[in-house]
Image (cartoon, rainbow, N blue to C red; front, side, top):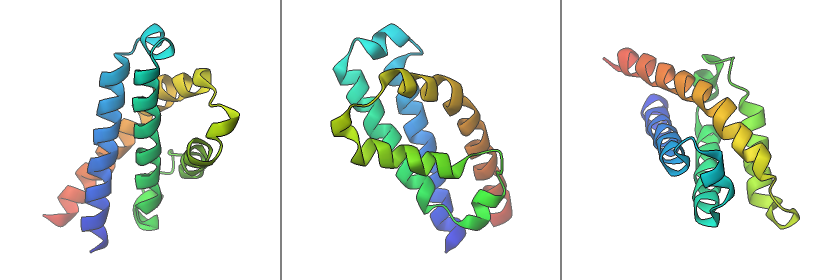
Length: 118
């Protein structure tokens, strides 16, 4: 059951990353000047981070390069600290600097999990 559950959450994480990339079009100006894009990106980051919390510890151990704790902390900031204001510059940096490597790690985990299930 754990690998099936992990597969579902990995697929959701990849879907969130794809949506974020589509929303921003890797264009900082588009992100910074559109509250609609900001809201969409923030929501996807939140649900993506929630999905990372649902992954099994065994699976997370296969990707030590991912800072799972930081992802969880980022989610908590998005969910609980929104009234203090979200630093859009930090969000943009997370999207452009961190998401590409996270995407690679998640794709690798998904491929390994798929091979293990065959």
